[in-house]
Image (cartoon, rainbow, N blue to C red; front, side, top):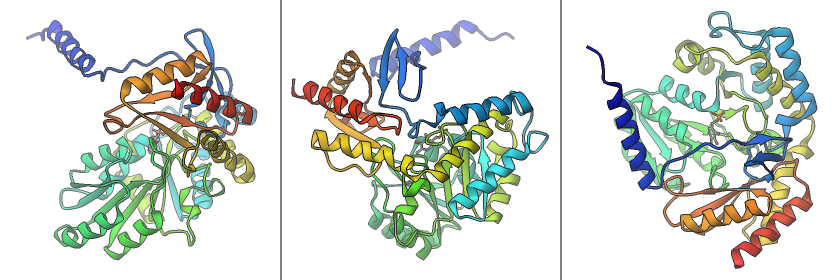
Length: 387
Ligand SMILES: *Cc1c(COP(=O)(O)O)cnc(C)c1O
């Protein structure tokens, strides 16, 4: 029997049609980076205010040089899983350095932040367990939780009382409990009360997993969001990415030696995938050196975010992510288009990524932006909003 290829295409086009009608169809666009802040899009040069390359390290000469040298010395690809022959010494060395930087016993590196979260929860939880997750947690924390087949309990955003209450009522019925939160929420830029989460989780014997994708390199002298709390909260599962402030690619989990060893033996997205290419590892290593030695560089994105917010009279940001909430999707899209006419690239974020009625511009700041360009972006936006 042969399958009918037209029915596959028919299925795809009907599905796309439905998405189109619901305004959910997405089309990736060509966008070529010229340097840490300038991009070419539709034959126009724009200043990029929506990248997560917070420190401009993806374009730092030393980082690029390290990547190029590693590719020339060690090859373009790793060739196999790290459990076969892909385990380059540099990968082990980078894990040691990240563990030391985050103050944990051990660290394990994954193919990406997304893969790390697809790996961690399923390696720790199963059908007898319960996973509490903040409603605004990143999509990959949800994916990992679903893949684990544990019971899923979605918490109102940053509502630690709700967590305490539900743990009180439900914890006993399950073998293990996990609590999954972002340290910095990617669409709002607000921080989670990590100190309170850590206390409540410890009290109820629940394991806290914090996704610090937007904290590493930009908060707590570059060491991450947890370092902004005194005393530093005890977080047993500290996950993050090499793809944002470190300007490279890959994800990590910093945790105890036992937990990391369990990942090495049980985490499917680690075992059955090819190890990171040498150039990617070398770039992250070099970027980590810059982060470790330059706290002023790490502080700059938040300073620029605060400058921008002050110019527009917005609340003081807690991270380099500043949402400018405009209401309906059309208004947000129109503002994004007008900014592009003025030479700035700022994405409009619409439902269902954010709640209905809270469509917004999501502005992110990089150490590589000049104060002048931040001020002129604010002036341009002020003008657009007032129109
Ligand atoms: C970007 C992001 C990820 C995914 O990391 P990648 O390395 O890009 O796959 C995970 N969690 C959060 C909160 C993120 O913002």
